[in-house]
Image 1 (cartoon, helix red, strand yellow):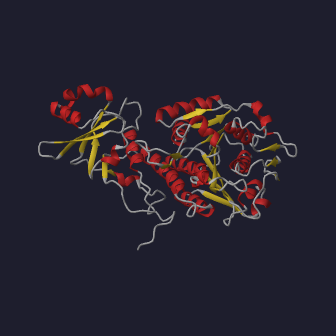
Image 2 (cartoon, rainbow, N blue to C red; image 1 turned 90 degrees about the horizontal axis):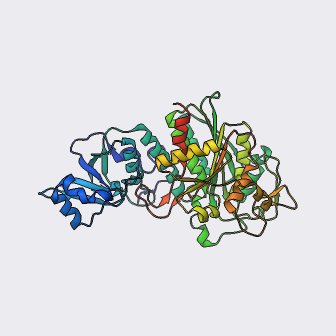
Image 3 (cartoon, one colour; image 1 turned 180 degrees about the vertical axis):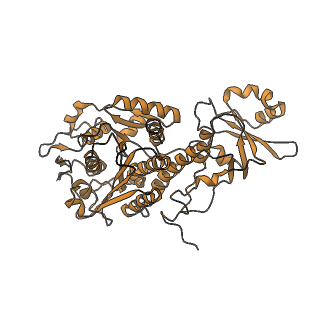
Length: 472
């Protein structure tokens, strides 16, 4: 029996599904795809003829988002496909057609946003099959490729692949290897600070969180672009598995903890988009790659940690480890005063309670950044929601023995996502603009453009905003 591929053995740069494999440049013999909204159902006879209208009625086709209706000719040969898009608001709503069609070439016969069509097709066609047999559809979308849709799909696939890979194949070592692979592809530089060198190089909180693992904790620091260009820094939480530490999680809460490096996966996907587009920025990606494991040298509740920033931090709960790792990473990024510093992390359950799995909450002091991001999020259908950095809640993290406790110590359990963001804000001083994203990084129920599994959140919106702000 052939051995399964490891996390880095994919035939292309990263992605288990190669976006190019979902497309054909030849349009010869391509079967037409027609979008149909729910409101157009009464006009099917006018649009396609009475036979098609009767066929739709007989098959219960109502034009809802994600519905697909193959329409044969008199001989039974596939003639066209009707694609339900509901109210027609989301440009990604026709994505699921890629998973439902038989082998062949297809082409959309209406609409003028080729990029959105290709992106929705690609995102829907993603299939993580590294540990099982092939099940990918061989339905191809015909036409000339849109370069921006291609790089966005590749970035999303990088994120999905990294999150979907289980922790036995995606520990700190593999996350480092993935970062190096991305750097080689784009001719970027990578610096790694590993193991006890984290102490001598002043990253004490990263070391404390990751020292109990058999794989040494490490700081990954990627740089790309010209030094004179605007400095954009992306910071990602790279906790490759989170047991909760000595405050161990129950089994039900540990089941999806392979996705706790979702912040790192998201910033690597976004970095690929930025570098592929050759935006005129000086890009820096900083990731704290650790496993929050349990052993005799694990950090403990009640410990007081030093930080790179000089702030002393009392540990209230070892299952709130991500903000400690991010604190040292943010302090490093802040030292060179970037014009924009963004951190992405699967940080709190409180964010899911507040906004659910679909909405990515973000925090920033910068109203202009927030307005631009929200505009881009609406344009590309990558939803985000601004949350408040409510300053009075700083008092909820009071410590009697250190500068701050890293969790809410008031006993109320209130404002978990907000207090986490406020804790992170203590490590940012010089960046012109800082934004924190508390994402879920996972799709629990399939969508037309996304199967169940790891997901990129907020990065398509961020990329759209950056493209508009910085020239290529």
